[in-house]
Structures are given as structure tokens and as C-alpha cells.
Image (tube, rainbow, N blue to C red; front, side, top):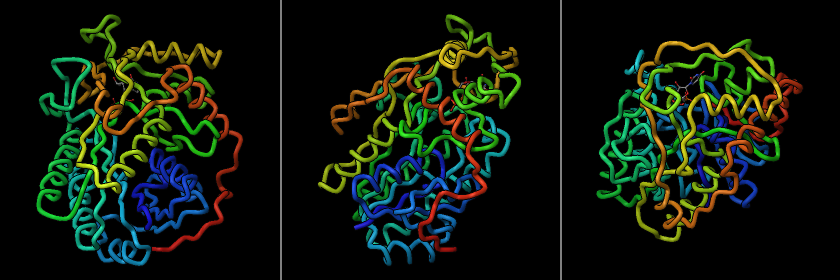
Length: 340
Ligand code: UDP
């Protein structure tokens, strides 16, 4: 048995790969290294440098390694970028996922875990939002993920495939042991950008929209620690392997923070001030979104360990320091790499 982790050289995927290796699983990372890093993949994992839409290559890897489960992270994740270039999002997220799901079916891989998103809800009328709420994405990113959920639902009904789609709220923080973190050079996500500003990598932070109908006028999000998110995936893997039913579940903490609250937390924990500029709204941003995660807790037995904004921020800040002081041009990794 082996677990294929797509996007395993990226932010969340690399944390997943570490978790699986620690649990004694055989791990095959598939990543085309367009935004991920070879050094982020644990040496114990096999790294296949390939596109997930390359069906011959993926199916060969599935068979060669005896893959019984896919955890699918690979994809594009920037909401405003998806508004500007929707077809790229439908290609990278929806069309490529279709290929990967087909490869799984053809290769007899019967367990599939998918990175979905809270963006499938748009701006829900009720907060915290439950899984049964109306699905009304406000960006091509959200739509591209929702379409993949639908493909999984229909494929699971027709073939020997079980799936879990986990709808992530705002993932942030870094590995508490400092092995991985958000390393993308042009990262756009709030905690990362604020951590860069607090550690001197940027000279300011822009707040996109200060006239939203919220207490301080900025958008509200539910920030979840990447290690808790990865734990939920591991529990979902165990559930599917044990023959548990399909599951679509939110992953968040059930508490929202505004953009300004996050910025203040970063300044407080870092002990550094930085310039904050008030700017226009960003396209595709829902006003407020907070998870009701009762289902994940109940069905997966998920019990978050880092449900605390200051802990998330502290880990994100420490990762910035690690990145700053480490020479990433000399990869730490010594594992097996197979070219696509
Ligand atoms: N945001 C911001 N400045 C930044 C990055 C993000 O004001 O430099 C805001 C963004 O407009 C949204 C919230 O922070 O309201 C969370 O955005 P992020 O990109 O982190 O995640 P998303 O919710 O889009 O997945």
C-alpha cells in the first residue's frame, strides 16, 4: 500500500507527506515543481516530477508503487488570479483533476481525498456555515473546486471509488517542528504576507477593502493551522481505508478574525510594527466565512491541536526566520527523484 500525494512539494502537501512518513506510510509525491520545492519533500518519500494530467505517467506510478489512496492537493489557489484567468483555473483544477480521478479508477485506486475549499459557499447567508448550505462560489477558483467535488460524487456512485472532500477555510502557520512552511516567493495569503512584512521581507501590507459590512470594515475568515488540517486528512484516509462512507466536511475552527485582527496579532507576536495601506476591494473576496466543523469532529474524530491565532502566527513567523537564514539553493533532500 502507498499513498500518492499530489502537490506534495507545495505548502499543505509537504506537511501531509511529513505526516504520512511519520505514520510509517509509503509515500509517492507527484509534483511538477511549478510552485513547489524539491527540498520540501521528505527524503523518505518518492518524488515523481510530473503533471497530474499526464495519465500514462500517473497510472504507471500508481501501479508500480501499489498506490491504494490519492490525496490530491495539486492545483491553483489564488482567488483574484482566478478571476483574471478563469480558464487557467478550470484547466489546472478541474480538467487536471478529471484526469487524475480517471487514472485512479483505471488503476484500481479506491480511496481519494480532495482539497476542496470554503470558497464553494461564496458569502453564506448563515455563519458558521454548514456543509448543507447553498453552494454559490463567487470566483472561478471556488467553481473549479466545486466541479471537482461533483465529479468525485458521480464517479464514486459509478465506480469502486470512495472519497472525502475537505473544504478548507484559511490555512496558515507552519510545521511546529520547523520542517516545512509556506515558501512560495510570490505568496498572497494574508498570514504569510503579514509575516513577511513583520520580518522585513516586505516594506508594507495592503488591506484590500475596508468598507465591508463587518465590525471593522475588513473581511472575516476562519484561520486554521496547516498541521491540524493535515491531521484531518490522515483521519479521512483511515476512515476510507476502513470502508467508511464518502464524506464532504468543513475544516476550520468555527471562529472568525478580521484582516485587521490578523495584522494586529502578527505585529503583537512578532514585536514589530509595519506599514499598513488601506486599498480597494480585491475581486472575488467574500465578506465573511467561518466554518461549522462539527461534522469533521464527529465523523473523523478530529480534534485540532493548534486552535489559537497567536500559535498559528508564531509558527508562520518562525518559518519566515528559517527561510531567511537557510540557504535553499542547497537542497536538504537526499531522496529518490524520478523525472516525469
Ligand atoms: N488580504 C489583504 N491583504 C493581503 C492579503 C489578503 O487584505 O495582502 C485579505 C483578503 O482580501 C481577504 C483576506 O485577507 O479578505 C484573506 O485573503 P487570503 O488571500 O489570505 O485568503 P482567501 O480567503 O482569499 O483564500
